[in-house]
Length: 427
Image 1 (spheres, rainbow, N blue to C red):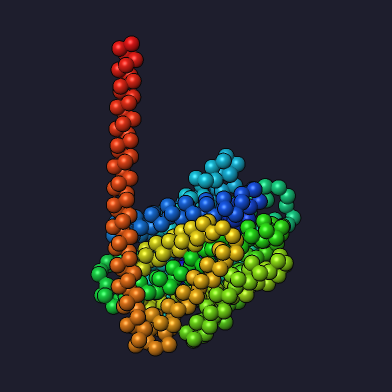
Image 2 (cartoon, rainbow, N blue to C red):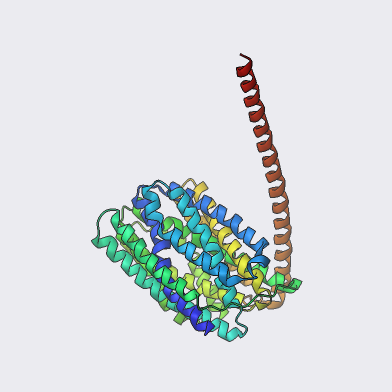
């Protein structure tokens, strides 16, 4: 029953997710925002999302006492914030509504991931992942077709309001399905060092993969609209083709070997270069299909690798949201700081190459030499943990310094005000 509800929720949410996520950069570009402005609003949105995901991880014990209550609250709030973007723009509040939409997606993703990894039978878990991916892709396709059709036949900004309204109805239906979930209270325990080594390397792989995908997702459609002067419905066709590929691809990739997954990632690393090399907008539609087909292989691989690490599901559920937010933040930072659009796509390609190297040398399930991979994975784990500890120390010290400076400025401002007020009374 639980497995069926998880699959149906994915199907109902797919339509809503496709419209809200794929339409956002198109909507911003159509409203006159430049690529830099779109990247900037994504940049600070995912910065706050990263902080919020870290906060959730820190206090996950409290959240897991009654996970269903929090899942329902965040599941509904996410749909409200995402579908209010056109209204927020009309009141010049897009800069506030978009970060709230991004942030509200974080806990929903964590709790859904937790539900999936709570399935004890590994084969059943993989089956749920497969069916969620396939049915979500199907409803995503319906959302993409609806988006392209309405953008083509409707005029003006009203078409975006219509699309977001349809997305809201579909999203609320998926929230109703969440009511049928019966999550169990999760027992939290300290995983062994071997388990930590495994999930840190997998998370690093996902970080690199998602960072590259974030760059492509944020810049491809605005690039086609702004640089190649394509209409919005053609830009939306990129999303439709990617959705179509994601429907077909799970059938092709589900039973493939790890060698095939490595080959897919290697081929995928060339696609960011192809994006800025093609100057014909119509060719980007075909390129989008091929890109999504190969990206699906990488995503299925990461899902299967996570499914193998059931010993730390409470950590993985929330760490995955941190990695998701951090990957978006990394991708947006690189894209925003680049001087040329070509540099953005080149860096995206380099991230995919780095992810490929991890599958070759540090993840035992996919490595050429599994025994040697365990040695390399421990070295990567040690380096990552040391880097993380140093980053936390620096961040803490910088934050304390900033707070001291703010307090000093506040005290000076208060003293200045009191002095002027006393001077006024004396005069």
